[in-house]
Length: 332
Image 1 (cartoon, rainbow, N blue to C red):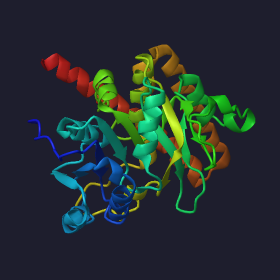
Image 2 (image 1 turned 120 degrees about the horizontal axis):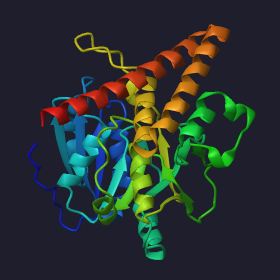
Image 3 (image 1 turned 180 degrees about the horizontal axis):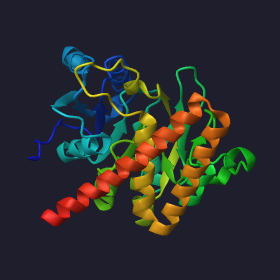
Image 4 (image 1 turned 90 degrees about the vertical axis):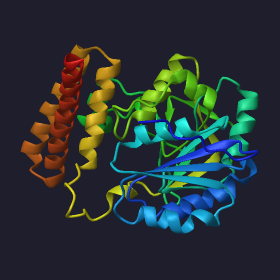
C-alpha cells in the first residue's frame, strides 16, 4: 500500500487518530469532545474507517466541516484491524504528538495540557493514559500489568476469586479523585493514549498480528524494554462506552463476525507466544483448556459453554495465523 500524503495544519501540535468500525452512534460525541478539550493543541484528526456498514462514513461526511480542526477521513475497503489502522494514521501524521482515542470514548478534561506538563517533569515518559469511566461515571479498567502464562491461568481458571492478588491484576480500575500525581503502570488501556512521535518511532509500529486487543499491551512492553515507561495521569479523564462496535445487528450480506471473546483469546495466545517460551505457553493453554472443559461439564450453563467455545476458537485462529505465516515464508 503506498504511503498516504501527510495531514498538515499550521500550528498543530497533536494528531488525533481514530479507527472506526460501525461507530455511527458515538463518533460525533467523540469528535465534539476533541474540539472542546484539545483546542489548545490545535489538533488535526485522522479517521480510518474499517469498512463500516452502519452509516459511520455517512455520519463522518455530514459532520466533517463543523469542527475547527482539519479532519481527514480514509474509508478502507476491508477491516484490517485496529493496529493496522493506527499505523496508517501515524504514516500520515506530521506532528510531534500523537493521540489515539476510541470512537466510543469522550475526553472529559484537557488531556494535552496534562500530558505536556507531565513530559516537562518526566522527559522519559512513554505512553500516557487516563482515568476511564463508563457513561454512569463508574470506573473502568484504565490499564494493567503485563500478562504472563501463569497470570493467564490465574485469570481463566478461577484462581483470581480464590487468591485475589492485586499486583497480578491484568486490569486496573481507578476511581476519579482529586489526586494529581501520575501513576506508573505497565500499560494504559488503549481506549485513550497520548505519546510523542519520538517514542512511537523508537519503539516501532503497533504489531499488526493483533487484529484487536493486546496491541497496546505489546507496544507498552516493547517501550518499557527500551526505557520508555508508561503512566496514567489522574487529571486526564475519559468516558468510554465499552464494546460499542460489537452491538450492531449483523448485516445479512456479510459473513457472521467472530465472537469478540474469540478475538480476545486469539490475541492473548499470540501475545504469550510472542513473549514467552513455547513450553510455558503450551502448559498454560493446556491447563486453561482442561479447566474450561471441566467447568462446562459441571455447570452446564451458557456462559461456560461460550467461554470454552471461544477459547478453542481463539487458539485455532492463532494456529491458523502462524501456519499462514509459515506458508508465506516457504513461498518466499
